[in-house]
Image (cartoon, rainbow, N blue to C red; front, side):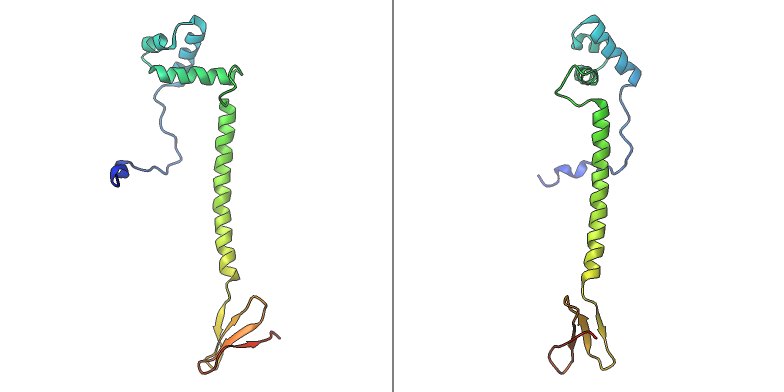
Amino acid sequence: MPGLRSWRRRTTSTMPAPRKYPDELRERAVREVRATGRPIAHVAKDLGIHKEALRGWVRQAEADRGERDDRLTTAEQDELRQLRKEVAELRRANEILKAASDTRSRPSTSADTAGNRTASCASGDQVRASPTRSLTHRQRS
């Protein structure tokens, strides 16, 4: 549907969204799951946390301790985020340089005193167009 996404607002801000749960609560919940061995859903219900949020925190804590290989550690995630940011910045810089290079490599045209237009060719020759004559090549002196 064409208008379905129109209600979503794109954010270009670099600030992250505010965290729903404080870091202390996250750490306490993960500690409790590990220490008591109770099911994640029960601990989550006791602390008023969504069970899937707590499950993700437990998995991340396990990855940070090296107990899981299927997930990046927090440090690796931070490094990956930084590298992606650098790649995006370098790509923007490349696009700017390409655009500047393209404008410099285009032949520049100028008019001489007789009203003839001249342009530089890739070979360095100059092409002159007269209003009454066809194009003529002139070697650069």
